[in-house]
Length: 111
Image 1: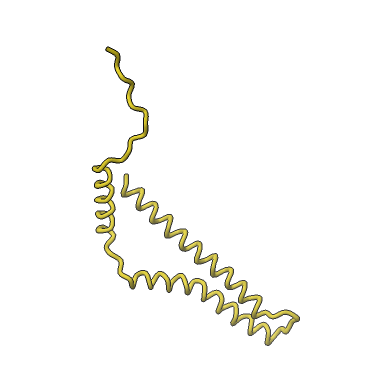
Image 2 (image 1 turned 120 degrees about the vertical axis):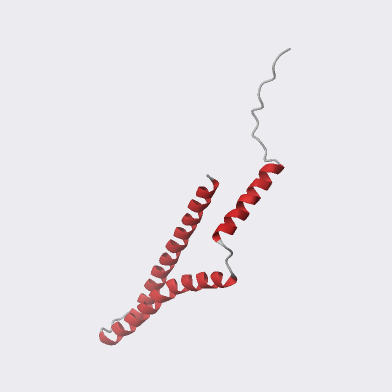
């Protein structure tokens, strides 16, 4: 009688694996606490201000420059666009850091 070779096919997750992963997710959520809708509003506001603040500073500086150093181009419009670019970069960087932190926590919890 010959032995059958071990099964080389990838293992499909069974019911116990699915239950285990759901339980891990619930435990992780319980450890971090539940976040209310106000937390979401606060994060949205924080990201919004990280874009709006550089724009407003650019506009203020642009208005001052337009009054004291008139030019053929509008300092206000130029610095508004520059402030928008800086604000968007700042928001993107902050969101990327938060996502990386969430991934690190997830990997740490899975280990």
